[in-house]
Image 1 (cartoon, one colour):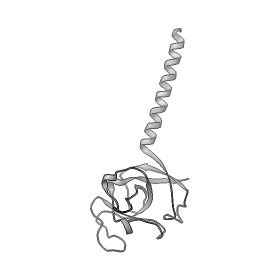
Image 2 (cartoon, one colour):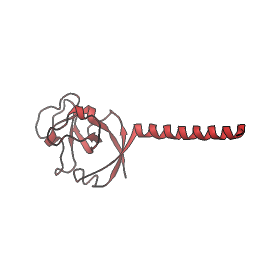
Image 3 (cartoon, helix red, strand yellow):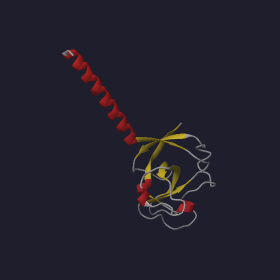
Image 4 (cartoon, one colour):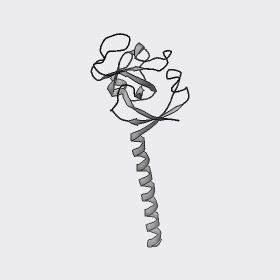
Length: 141
């Protein structure tokens, strides 16, 4: 194999490596999640997909992707950031009154609600630990 052939092979290997690293970086920053159920209707329909930016900077009113709670135990930080994912809206942040109860949201927690009262959310499972918030929705598909 001549030197020009080796240079071509090395260029191809470098291009593949750079592409793989680019995809890895995108996946670290962005996530695509499918909406399941009617809890976010009418804003988001069952089967819609949302693109979320991984971030810890969230605010009341943001639609966020969070790790789903255990059906019996609720949200526990030990479940930290693994699927299945829920898409919910932040209704109250730390120190703010929880809708419907009057008590304050604990530090490092968020009170999450679906847009449709028929779905499950913090009314059933309690405030969600901030550590379980994966990111903020930026676009629906």
